[in-house]
Amino acid sequence: MKRMVIDTNSLKSDHLKEYLSDPANMAVLPDFAILEMLKIGDAQGISDQLAVCAERPKQIKILQPTYSVAGLRSRRRSRGLQRRLVDKKQTAFFKTFCDKVEGAKNGDQLLQKQLKGKCEAAAFDLEKTVKNQETFTANLAEHAQDYTEAELKILRKGEPITPELLRKITDHIFGLLVGLVATHHYFKKLPDFKTLPNAFLFRFAVAGYVVALRCIKEGGAKGASAENIGSQMVDAIFATYATYFDGILTKDRRCQEICDTTNDVLKVLRSGFEKLEADGWQIQDLAKKKDATPNSD
Image (cartoon, rainbow, N blue to C red; front, side):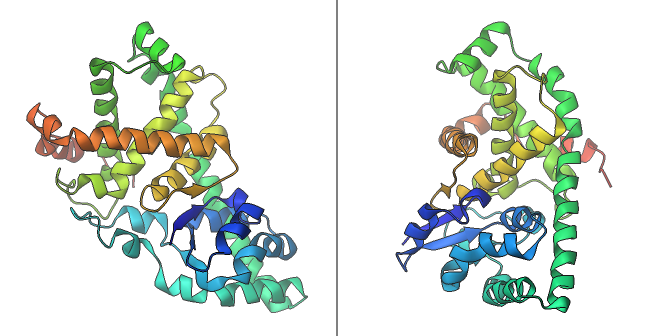
């Protein structure tokens, strides 16, 4: 049995149809897959996107909203991580949702009105995601200055990463994690080193930093609009979810590369956590930084 995260671009693909032909396989849909599907805005288009999944609703798992998942308390053991991410209510409601979309497509005015409201809300949420990347975009050029020309050459050419560069990358990842935790209302303190590898925000910090490195490799802030970064950060969210399951089904090469690189970086960081702590990566120090970081309410 496999549980694969499904990118929006693969919802009506032959690959997904073939994957679900094995009744043991499960398709995992994050909230952003639903939001991007609803952004289409009309019942016919949404019905087309849902067609493959609607044929096998019992093989579909809907995940909790990303904000809620990000606020889950991390655990040391990996057992049960997938189950915690699944939204049982929305998963059970999936077939009903598909039926309502079909009803709207077939002319039911009440269902059309309800669907229109969902589509407008989805478009708003996705637009907000793009706007939230404006600071990321503005800071990208300054961030690139933290790397020497030799280090930028290593990143751009995909050469082996030196211990010094790895430590710098790790430093930035932890810095990003501190910022993410500081702005999430569910957290009063950072996870400790024992549970950190399984924390969603830690894995997302890695995926988000992979996006930053891609932008630096491709020329820094030049051409990196908030819309472009926003799209890549959605890819980073999909990549983060994929680390909890058996990978991702996507037709987007960039998204697949972000997933693969995120997994590679996570393996390196996990294997070195004890050494990081011994070398001075004190979680208490990170907590102090977090407390000193103002909330963005």
